[in-house]
Image (spheres, each protein chain N blue to C red):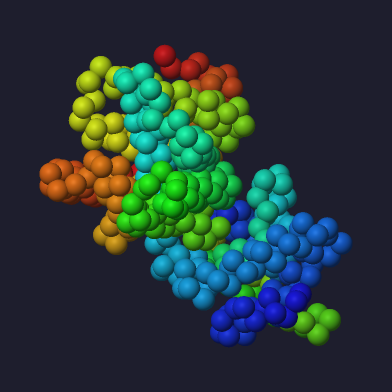
Length: 107
Length: 297
């Protein structure tokens, strides 16, 4: 899974969010490293909607402007969970080999 | 948001996302300085252009360019490294540099820029690296145009035909949708600096290794740079090649630039095609093994 996709799905994992809030969360999660600008963000949202990983949660009119919030679909949750497991397994193995966990590293 | 920016988008996209994009743009630029505003506007223009051309990340064309981009960079970087190594090798063997004119120095300078750009892009700073690569290729093309101007180096006009393919290949990564950029391979600045230090040293080493006549077969010199570039692109790039179309688009830059490097021609066409077929088969077997392993896990 590419990093922008991982960050976008992570940004929606805990609650539905609208466009700019998603971009802010992505920047927060990545520690300021990844800044998704508006064009790129909506390109990614369109793609994830097409892939069925996210869906429109709610549509509201705020200050006479349409505001949509997005949330993960069941498939999006599964994909994100699988990717999180993969990353965690790699990190656990790295920590084990470095002996950080206190276990002896194999020769 | 300037309504003219929104009008750049296709009507269907504008209907679906226009309102909320305008709101997101307003929030992103509220209280922001001119640089942020220009960057946001530039991102919108680039995205709208990609959608008009059908190469957004939601389009098949966009995913095709995303899969091929690392290979276009690898081929462009390998080509630049090959040309630099060949120039240095000739200078070492003959005792005279072949680039004693200002234009010669400029061309080699742009080759260095192209190589550095490719290394930076493949190591993970994709956007800045891809632009640097293109700038290097454009600089080389400009020098070649100057070279055919009357009074300058007396180069034949048909050499201008050599400009387009390398420039087009260097431009290909710029079409990759930003949300499909290859992952960062080298995360630390120290690692990147070490790589940037080793790259020119490796080119010099390659040039010196060839000096004994061992490398009269120039194919091996190009193959070394190609393998090094592919190693830098790594498994993430290879795993993006899932269809015959993607493989063809990924291979084309190597064949084209190999031809311009003088190593892919009539007498080497058959071995090159055999090598490509073997690579395609190896890739298919590797992918099958990966999916079998994932299935058993």
